[in-house]
Image 1 (cartoon, helix red, strand yellow):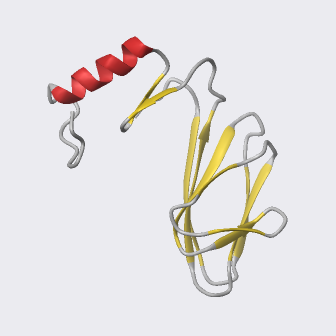
Image 2: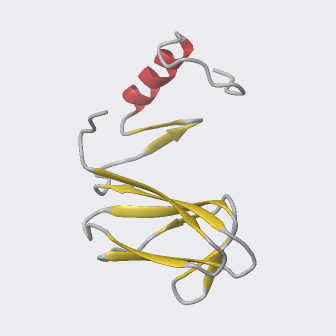
Image 3: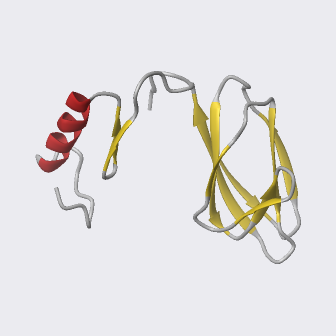
Length: 119
């Protein structure tokens, strides 16, 4: 799939107590999403399953699983967003018109079906 701007996605699996450091583009906005287990980042900050952390800019990202079990983490990012960011349900767009179009496209079946979404 081609994207309009460069993106980053890495799925990281760590054994209990294991660490990894990855080089990243310092110009990207990055986030970590913990899908399973617990990790420690920064100065002793712990994150558990289903937690999201927005990272500060830098040239590398380090992730460490806590010693109590393995961890699975998604590292994702891309170019910094410019302008407004609008949220509605599962949709994220930059203008009210695009948000309305996304809802319409979903309701008409252009995006398939997503259980539990009422529109």
